[in-house]
Amino acid sequence: MRKKQKHTMKRNKPSFAERLRRGDLLLGTLVSLPSPEITEILACAGFDWLFIDAEHGAFNPQQAQSMLQAAGECPCVIRVPSDDEVWIKKALDIGAAGIIVPQVHTADQARRIVRACKYSPAGTRGVGIGRAHRYGMGFEHYIKNANKQTAVILQAESKQAVDNIAEIAAVKGVDAIFIGPYDLSASLNRIGRLKDMKVTRAIDSIVKNCKAEGIKLGYFGVSAEAVKPCIRKGFTLITAGVDTLFVTKSATEMLASLRG
Image (cartoon, rainbow, N blue to C red):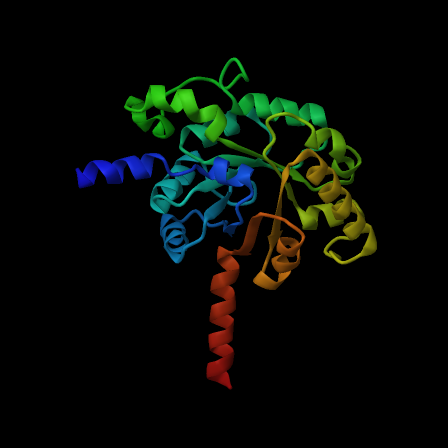
């Protein structure tokens, strides 16, 4: 009887997408190296989710799947290289809790992405059998629930996206807008100058329009201090730090200490 109760509790646990939509503070970090071991370590550290970076990280769908497997019960969201439907389909079929799509500039592009993430009749996602479907053993359950349990996150990181943010945020099926501060600053000819008034005004416009539509907000920073101001502003999808920076920071600090 006790075992049955535990199984029920696990089944009723809210999904990453459900937690995102209800506004839970979700603290994650970015994984850029194709290493299941690093993924496993970061999952064990207690993050709410992991940002698997297939846009800039040098790995393929098979490596990404190994990383998801290593993460265990920690939800992983894959940033796909682009809005390419093939990558979106593969990322979801290998069991990602959702996708982050970079460089989304228009509402039409946002609608195409949402359709690619949803099974018919809500979208055009192809039906196959993969890890997400428990290799067929959980096929019907997954197909029935995937549309509501898959997080669709779009990145606003260009001047064009800022100009169109009201229309992008109004697209049905978008769960969150993730601000890419460095690419955004570059598109405004202020590369890396994240506190420049032109950059902060662009971010403020994104925040205002997303809040008006009830869309959750995400942000990336290389440190805790970089993201704390966003948490205070109501951002709930947080990515702090990068696997490579964790290693280099610890290594250089140790060497500096030893060399006096």
